[in-house]
Each structure stands twice: as structure tokens, then as C-alpha cells.
Length: 220
Image 1 (cartoon, rainbow, N blue to C red):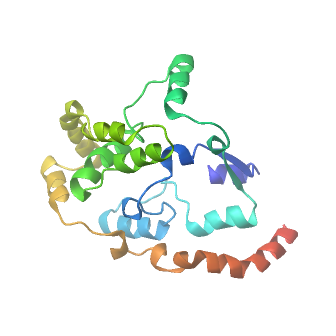
Image 2 (tube, rainbow, N blue to C red):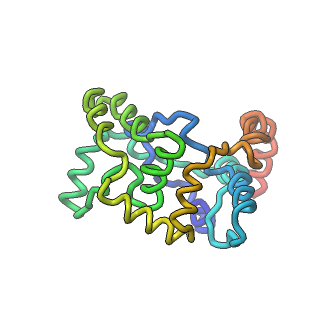
């Protein structure tokens, strides 16, 4: 998206990010998607397949787009009354949209990783963060959230066939997958990472670079 916008000289990008449904997420449940150093180091250690077509956006390129090329993100949903259930009703009735059952469950991979792997191997149920945000924004009650958490994170009727499909797509045997699920957790910090380098000090870095940024903007 950023590369396409840069190529077409489009500096305004509309996003669906919003505080109403996704404002709360503990640091232990996430890692920066801009940490390309981390992605590449993990890939180097466990794969021989080149990352030729895998889309990457590192911290420095992201900073360049935002600070030096004046790209702006516009999270439109933050500027209007947004109710998740009402929005779903509208797109179901007017666009024939089908509910896929959970946040980020529109993709098989994110559904399987978030609903099964993340919960069973690492003990993180992201539904808690998502529901906490909805409680905070007044869209559900705590009691409703607790009732939702009583349901399985992953549809039981899909689990067996989805494990088999995941193993097939990833090139694992079922035994290899089960072994991976049993192995001890390895934190991102065990690999190379921007988070342990200059990325942690990006505000200081940007403050230092701002005079240079202004000069470059005048030139380009």
C-alpha cells in the first residue's frame, strides 16, 4: 500500500483503524510489523526459501514516507459514530457480506494462528483484548464479554481439518507440527531486532533528523 501510494504520488491514505474496537492490546501479545530485521533473522535461521515476493515495510522506510514525504493516515472511523454491530448489519444487508466469526478470521492463516496457535502454545487469547476494547467503548457489557469467552476460541468442528490443511500448506507432517507446539517459547528478542537498537529511540532520532528533513523537503 505504501509503495503503491509513493509510486502514484498519493500522500493521503484512508485506513480502518479505530479506537472503538481495537484500542487495547498488551505489549506481550504483539510485535512490530515494521521489525524487518527480526523477520529476516528468523527466516534466515529456519528457511532456505528467498523472501522475493514477501511484502516488507521497515521502520526507516515507514519513517521516510511519513516524515520526509508527508504521507498522512486518515482513520475515518475515528471521526464518526461507529458501532461495530450496526456496521455489520449494514454491509450484510447492502453488500451480502458474510460474518467470518472473529476479528482477523477473514484469513485462514490469521484465524489459525490467532485462534489456535497463539492461544494453545503461548497462552494468549486475543479475544480478551478485543472484548476489553468493546467494553471500554460501551458497545458491550463485561457480562456479555465473559459469556463470549466461554465459547471456544477456535470452532471445534473446523479444528481437525484446519490443522491438516495448515500442515499441508506449511510442509509439515502432523508429528512435526505437534512437536513445534510442545517446544519451549522463544521470544522475539532472541533474534536480531530493531526493537533492541535504534528503533527504541526513534523519537530522539526523529528530533535529531527534523532539521535535515526540512532541508530535504525544500530540495525535493
